[in-house]
Image (cartoon, rainbow, N blue to C red; front, top):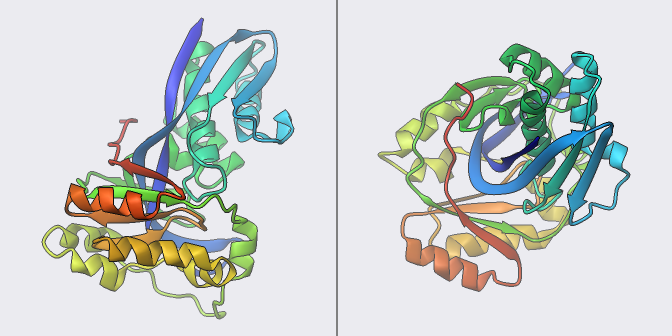
Length: 284
């Protein structure tokens, strides 16, 4: 059997780090939004788990999240079979677009088909959470408030009425280092109502720039000034809102006019850029 699926990227529309938890993780508040940039995941029957990535990521196979996801699913359900999994990468690694996490989630769902496992949202969420905090979101895609460490999800239906340009400067930002670089005090910060801000932005898009932030930006911008310059350039080209995604290094901009996206891509042509649209929920 030969099966194929798409693994979509995400952006964070606002990312607040509220404080450090007792378990040493950080409490966050964010909106995850899937966009149409995607990797392609192909699986076929095999006697063992094998993962092939194009282009090669330069890491051992057993360190690839796709391999870990396949092994976790196999162990959870005591599956005797294996699978050969091929990944065609398009989402830039280490850019804050969730490519690895999305690939892992897509693999979990694809292998459920290959191994004829009834798809159970609760079980898949448990497995996904054991692998990484972003992975549960990609089981469903669309728009969701992410709380806790990112694994507590509140999905909601939303139409984002903008053209989106994503710029990836090819700088790999370590999420661990980004958290260590945060300048937050010991007090727990209050979470903003990000969903309400998005809903109100349909009648007043200025609220996005006024009330949304990414708490990783000060550290990342100081470490890699070119990322700040990309954000400024998106505004110069007419973006009504621009923000770094995740812990970086990708920066996206929302535009009202498609002509401005062409201008932005031309101005930032030394970087890999995408023009994309949101993706709606897929796991109902």
